[in-house]
Image 1 (cartoon, rainbow, N blue to C red):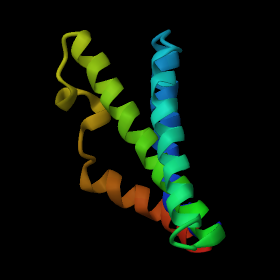
Image 2 (spheres, one colour):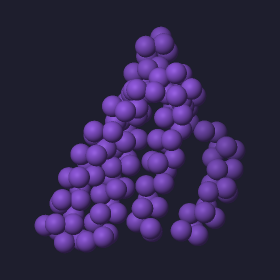
Image 3 (cartoon, rainbow, N blue to C red):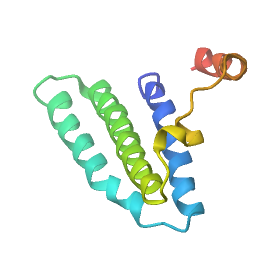
Image 4 (cartoon, rainbow, N blue to C red):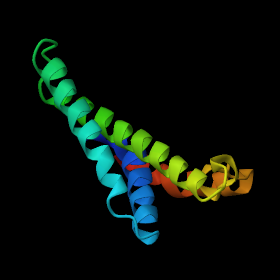
Length: 117
């Protein structure tokens, strides 16, 4: 569980991106990330659990890697979607860097949860 906590940010952003696709009435595009995610998890499991002998911890790290692969793929797909609408991803609110006030509020909110894990 502690290892998988490293994947929570990627899982959260993936859920937000999937919700964005669904809100834009596009339910099929996020499915393109599934094969990549599954492949990363499978290869990670085979390497980390098998030859490297990490056991359950290796499986957890493989899952974390697949969560970040899913997030990266969804970000690429979302970026392409935004370009198709004629906008640049850098001007999209999703890719805008938070102001320091927003970042402090986020850290105050998230820190206790991350410490508890």
